Length: 199
Image 1 (cartoon, rainbow, N blue to C red):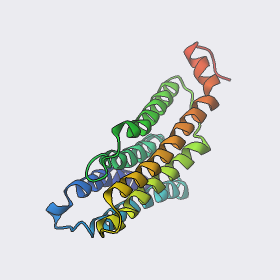
Image 2: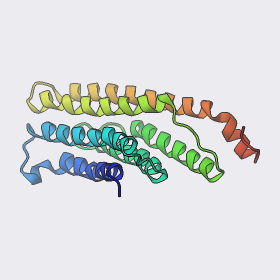
Image 3: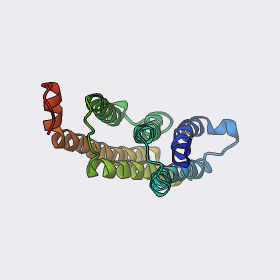
């Protein structure tokens, strides 16, 4: 277990912590007013582990095939967990909207696995890195707008509408990143489907 992998696993562990506090904050003695600050703390810690696991992996030459697989998996688990839990509670974001994030990660992970089994490594795209940033910003904004809502300064209808727009924008870019990824690698994928050697 390298430092980078420990940080990656800690991000996976933080995902259910965020969900548990979001859903059952009262059971932990947390007031509704304090809840967004607790959630922001968990999110910040999670995003810091995402930033530093890659840094330590490169700095201490700890880059590994295991890390290359687990790191994107941890990203998917942490961010999709947040989006899924937003379908509960006061927000009740439409589940159909969240499926965009789930399907995108599932399809690309499956494609990369199939190609890896054929000995072909599909490189990450810049749009994928931007997608991760956009999703993180969307989650932070949802929690930030929770602050005026919990203080009674933002009606639930307005809060929900704002969050749907925010998550919709993130979903649209997520969809674009999927199209960009498939388009960039369509030749390799086609060759593998046709059992041809990739260039």
